[in-house]
Image 1 (cartoon, helix red, strand yellow):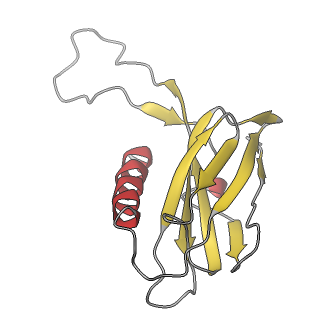
Image 2 (tube, rainbow, N blue to C red):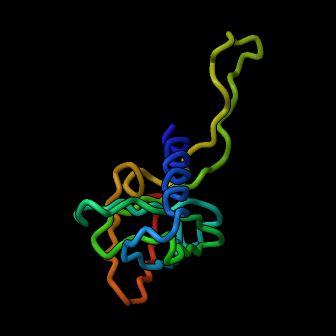
Image 3 (cartoon, rainbow, N blue to C red):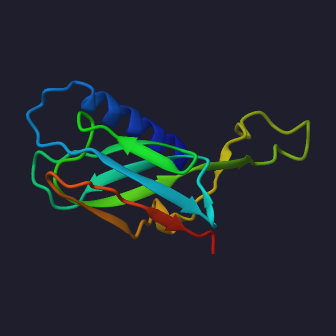
Length: 142
């Protein structure tokens, strides 16, 4: 469920950022995400403002082979952000009984990343004007 909400939020954030020319002091952000000692193959990273004023908006991007990059056009404005990282793992098993009642629900991908890095995130980033704004995150399943 969280994965679906994250994807909808990311889509809304991306569409909002695509309008361009919004007059905000947006900054590009880049970085790497390592999970259990390996680059995170595929995931999403989201930046949620914590105290940036009324013009602050959430933004995010895709992680591929451990790398992410959010352009200046779609990037966050300077300020403090809570960072959430998500990635889908293997599919959950279907119901054991092939004759299961309808409505048992579809098979959803299991969240690979622990909650302390997404729904209960402890990750932060401080975006600054004119700086590299490179944020690397090392995550562990333990």
